[in-house]
Image (cartoon, rainbow, N blue to C red; front, side, top):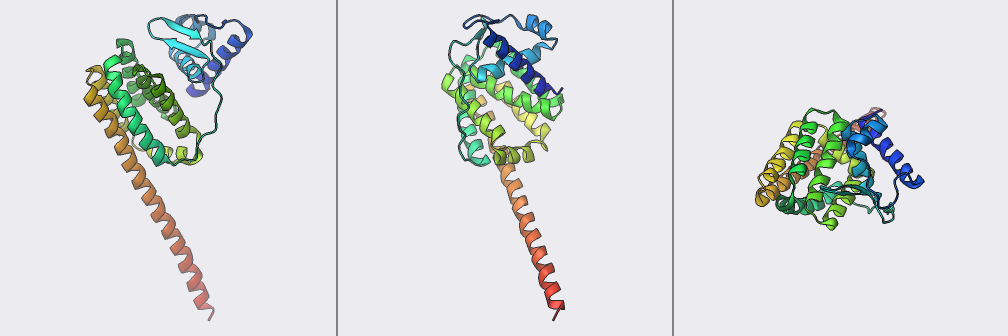
Length: 246
């Protein structure tokens, strides 16, 4: 089972235990180590499953206190808007640059360590592991901003990135070919956050998304040029074949 499917499977099992009353509403979940032993997985997988459940409102992660079963109803899967990859990335740049600046003031040592671990996983992991680490990196920074509206916005934008087919296709066409650059950009954000430098964190995050938009534009232009050339080639062949008939 892949890393992504494994944490999703654990998330489903924990959700089922909540529904069955094994973990009552408002109660604190056992620690990562205990859950890791219970499900026979790593503590990282447990953490990823808990973050996934927090994203849909099943759990609430309280820094320094633990993970609790949410007392609210799970969020519904509302319909996503019709947007382009450029619109999603522009919105992410605007929101996440400010989220990084805010996070620099509030981020904890524990979150700094977690972000460093995620950057390292981006560098050495396979595509699936790197993509998951990327998502968790951005959500951790949003969480560190201590602004629930920002965290919700970042999660929704990531849903658009991953769930709208045309947006996902564009991201996959550019993110799979620049792993080293992507890792170094994330490392620059991490270093600024570690230094608690709000301005540097904002600038590093903005630079990351500006480069991503430029890469998307280049990819789109190449695709458009290839389509024009393909149509021209087909027309040329058709008209030359027709000319030979006369």
